[in-house]
Image (cartoon, rainbow, N blue to C red; front, top):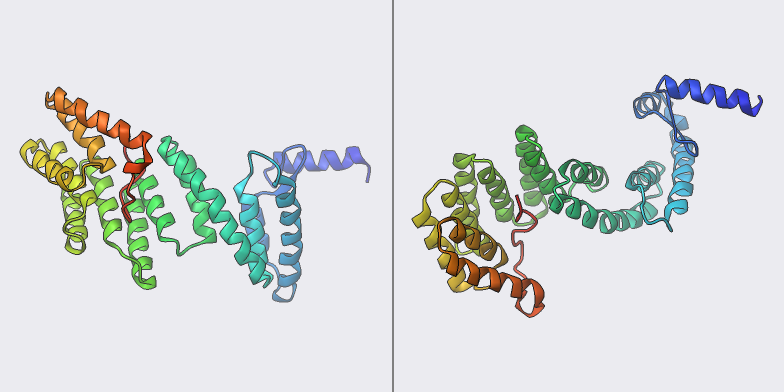
Length: 287
């Protein structure tokens, strides 16, 4: 077969969505690929996954020096390594993937690119299905995208996994309540905050999340009291400084709002103030 004939066939298959071709790499369409994987005979399974692992290893190694990498390549590499029983190598790469992709996914979330962040977290879920943080972020992304049933399912899965592996769950209820309060699902939010508070009654992030909810419900007295209570015990709590200063500005107390904003700026510029709090609320400061 000549090169021109091969090119013609590839273009035809690409037009019919059977193959994907970007001018350099040739791949089978995902739906077609999944169909053929289900038809592979058991005795051919190892051979197929070994060949696929070698293919994705070549692509992975080619991308190592690139600034913009395609995370799906290393994910496919890990999948086929696992299926071909190269477990130790797959485990090593799983750790690498999580370390590489999580910061990018979090940054996309902070930058309000929720669809892209969601795609990366879904990819991570395939690699590390029992990662509680990943499941929680999938819930938060779904909420931001208006997919509330999927949001609830993700948080429920995160809580189930956390309990199974012996992790704390209170912060998951807090984050679930926080995102619900953001979108005025106040009854749900109150329920989740109560479940979080049961385990951590004095936690500043829960109290400030509750204060935020009271603010959104125009219960300004309750909001102010809770914000003040947190700042008395935790004068440099970032979430509280962020939202209490906004609350004060909105309610006309510009002098104190300015003081809190100055304290927040000092906090962000001087890491001496940054005493980390385990499971502190994060990433959802801006709307």
